[in-house]
Amino acid sequence: MRVALDAMGGDDAPAPNVLGALSAVSESSDLEVLLVGDPEQLEQQLTEHNAHHDRLKIVESEGVVGMEEKPTVALRAKPNCSIARCWQLMATKEVDSVVSAGNTGAVVAAGLRTRLFLKGVKRPGIAVTLPNLKGQSLLLDVGANPAARPEHLVQYAVMGKVYAKEIMGIENPRIGLMNIGAEEGKGNELYQQTHQLLQSCAIKDHYIGNVEGRGVYQGEADVLICEGFVGNVILKVSEGMADYMLKTFAGAMLGALDSEREIGQKVMGDLVTKYRYQESGGAPLLGIDGSCIICHGSSDARSIHNALKMAEQLQAHQINSQITEQLATSAAGVE
Image 1 (cartoon, rainbow, N blue to C red):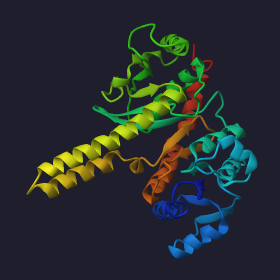
Image 2: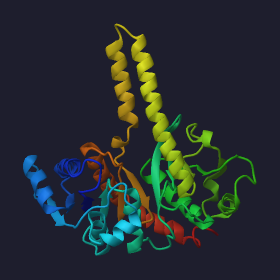
Image 3: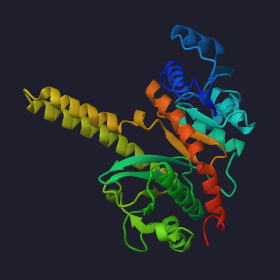
Image 4: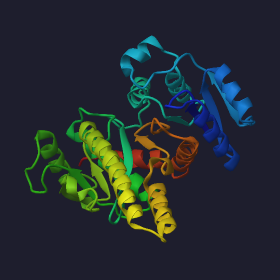
C-alpha cells in the first residue's frame, strides 16, 4: 500500500511526520510512504534521525497551508502545496491514501476539489470515535459538511454502519440522530426530514431514533450522525471537557494519596493513554475514492504511525467497496 503523507502538516512538522512514517514502514512490510514536502527539510530530518528507508520516498511540493490560513484562499495561492500535492497523487492513482496533520479545512477543501468521491456519495464526512460507558461510538460528520441536507445525513448513517461493523467490531450497530430531544418532531427542518428518511431507508432496522447530547457518553447509540457544524462543536467540547476532567481528577486524587501515590500516577497514566487522540491516529474522511486520515494538529510520531496503520486497516477491510454496495441498494441509501 502506498500513502501520501503531508510531511509539512502539523504544529511540529516535519519531525514527527518523518519519525512516525519510519516507525510505520519498519513495522509493516507492505507499506510505502511518500513524504510530501520541502525536499531540503525532509532530507535533513532523515539524516538527523538516521531515518532513511527504501520505502520512504520524498515528493517535492511548494509551500504549506498554515493552521491560521483560510483554506480556500491558501489553496488558490499555493496550488502545489503539500496537502494539494497529496491529493493530486491520489487522484492520479499513484497512492492509495492521504494522511495529514495539517489545516483540517485545507485537507477537506483540497479533497473536495479533486471530486474523488465514491460512486453514489454526495458529500464525504469526517468520522471520529468517542468513548462512552458501554465502549465506543462513532460520530459523523464533525466538520467536512456544515451545510448538510437530509440525504447527506442518511448517507453518513450508511457509511457509519459499515465502519462501526468492520473497524469497531460492532456486529449490529445502532444508529442515532443527534437532536435537541428524543421525541418525535424535535429539531429543525433538516433533522425532522432526516428522521423521516431514516425511518424508511434501507438501514431502518438499525435506526433507534433521536439522541440527545447527554446520550453520547451514555452509549445510547453506536453511530451518531449530524451535520458538520454540530459535530465539530460536540468534538471540541468533548476534547476540552476530557482534558479538564482528567487534569482536575488527577490533581485531586494524587493530592489525597500518600503511600499509594505511585499507584495513582499509574492509573491516571493508563487513563490518559486510553483516551488521548494519539492512540487512534486520526479521523477518516469517509466517502472518498481512496482514503484520507485527518490527524490532530499536535500529533506526535506515535499518532502519525497509528494514522498510517488506520489507512492500511481501511484498505484491508474493503470499507469503500462495502459503502458503495450498500448505497447502491437504493437511491442515496433511501428506499
